[in-house]
Image (tube, rainbow, N blue to C red; front, side, top):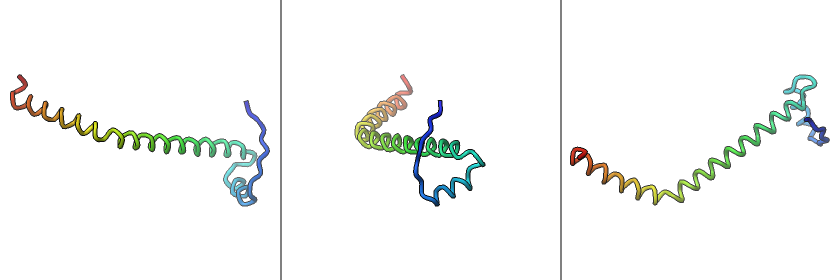
Length: 81
């Protein structure tokens, strides 16, 4: 379903829109631009959350890696027995 919106844009934005959109396809171009913009924002937010989570768990992850490294080394020394 499509809905009609009434928006006010700066004159320069309308000129750019008219140059970029095929005749009669302003709505399609605006739809695609909004979707791309929001997808980018969502990806940026996800990256931020992943980065924050990694930083919060860094000490725990390092401890686990060191613990497993010593177990792995022990297994190699004993020949896997």
